[in-house]
Structure formats: structure tokens, C-alpha cells
Image 1 (cartoon, one colour):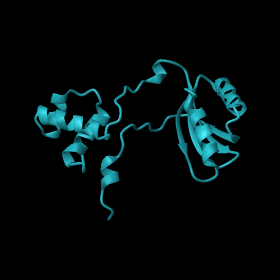
Image 2 (cartoon, rainbow, N blue to C red):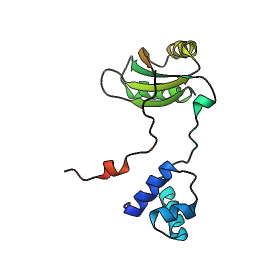
Image 3 (tube, helix red, strand yellow):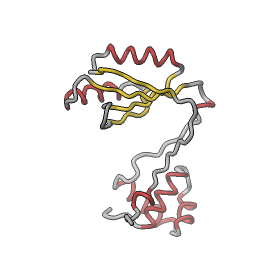
Image 4 (spheres, rainbow, N blue to C red):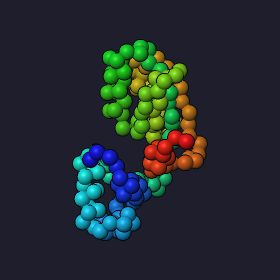
Amino acid sequence: MEKLTNIDLKILEVLQREGDITNVRLAELVGLSPSPCLQRVRRLRQSGYISDVTAILNLKKIANYVTVYCQIRLSEQTMRQFSVFEAAIARIPEAVECGMTGGEYDYIVKFVVRDMEHFSELSTLMMEMDIGIKNISFNVEVKKVKNAFEMPLQALLAKKR
């Protein structure tokens, strides 16, 4: 697929909000008949515009937890050290997001843990893993203000004024 059409964008926007929508309802919402709509969704998947479909859990109903955002500085800023750290962080289930950053820290990692004792054990373990961590700074989430899963497609694709 070379370029996204307006209908493709509508399909992607709807699927972000309603991943389990029926093809018939999706077709109605984007102004297509079901067969061409299904073909477009298949093309969007095959072209990599849709990578996964998942359920968003209401974790508050399942378990008590704490969200901790860590800023991590490595002892060396080399490709080898980045690879070692990234491979290790990928194996830690409590690390639910990780991004390399520019600035004072090399990475920001979002951890979801049972409590602060669990986080303390995890951070101690990470320091002992010999994965190049120089220091860890962290902030505890007190209140979730916004938790968006939809990407702002229209804003990202809008022409500059």
C-alpha cells in the first residue's frame, strides 16, 4: 500500500477506538460496503499499518498496583551498552514501556509493580544485573490524568500552516 487514503485513515481511527468492531459496522461508519472494507483492513494489516489488536485491561479491577516512571542513566553511551540494557529490560515483565531519550538520562522506563517494596526489589535486582546502570531516578504516579491509546492521526498528518 503506497499512500493512505481518507477512508484508510477513517478505518484506522475507528479501529483504534473499537478494536473488536464488526466489519459490517466498520463499513457503515466509513461509508463502504462490507467486502471492500474487509479488503482494506486486510491490506492495512499486510502493509504493517496495523501491527496488533489487543484488549485494554482495567487493572484496578484485577489487582492493587503502583506505576513508577524511572529515568535511567547508563555508565557508558555505546551501542554495545545500549544493546545489553535493552535486552535485559525486555525480559522484565514489570517494565511495560521503555524509551531511549536524549538529555540527562538515557532511558525512561514505566514499571507496574505491586507496591514500593516490589519496586525496591526490582531496582536492586536491576543494579545487580550488571547491565550498565549508573543511576536510577524515579517518580511514582499519584493519579492517572490521561491514558490515551489512540494516536492523533489527523494532527500528525495535517499540513503545516
